[in-house]
Length: 290
Image 1 (cartoon, rainbow, N blue to C red):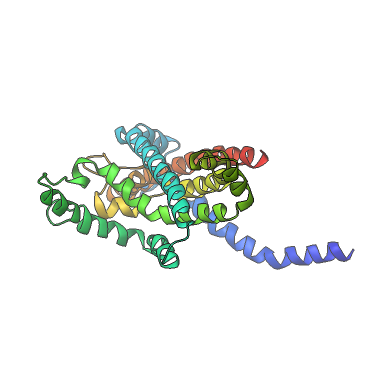
Image 2: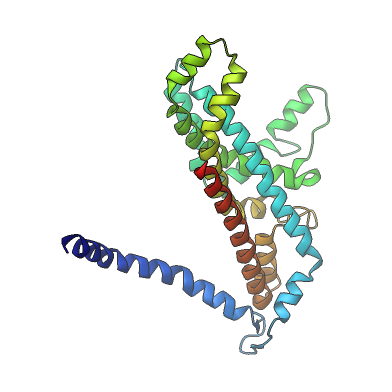
């Protein structure tokens, strides 16, 4: 009885926070769903009308939709590849004893605390600028023609910017997992004559698999809504070369003033994000069972 009473008391104590959290999520989602069935243009207030599924048909038949969808998948996949591989390599490096290890760890983690808008502006103006950027000066010093990253390869440039922001997060999680590895296994393998590559492949990598799946899941959820980096660097261009689903929703809602179509796009984006999240959750569940 005492255990049941304590559980009931615990549930009652956390119930206000749970209710507020549900309202925080459900109310905006419900309003978005409602607006997605309306003909609602910001330039014509008071003339809203029921549109049914016309907004969804319009959004899905937009020529930019499949381009935005492929750009979103390429952006998420590219960032995950860079951060996962780079995070493993940096974790292995930071796990080694060397002078100034604490300072180096702080410097490696620091980019994660920089605001996305600030980091995008820094990369745009200080690194990737084809006239005054650092990369342009390095190219000139080597006798090469400066490369205009944001015009010639906009999606790749945004992928690098976003990956730079998320690499510290992946490194921190993977470094924590690596430090939890039993050192006796590595010492026994070393005494048996196993080379470093074999120790990494057969001992370290399987141990890091669970941490890597968690990194992939958390990053994917946030990467699907990447927006600020695109807005301050390329504005989705040239054309639609760097337009993602999130940015396409912004264009239709606030630049074309079509709230109904933008809301429909938001619902489509939420559905696709949930499909990806469910797939990754199942993948992580299978990984944790093994």
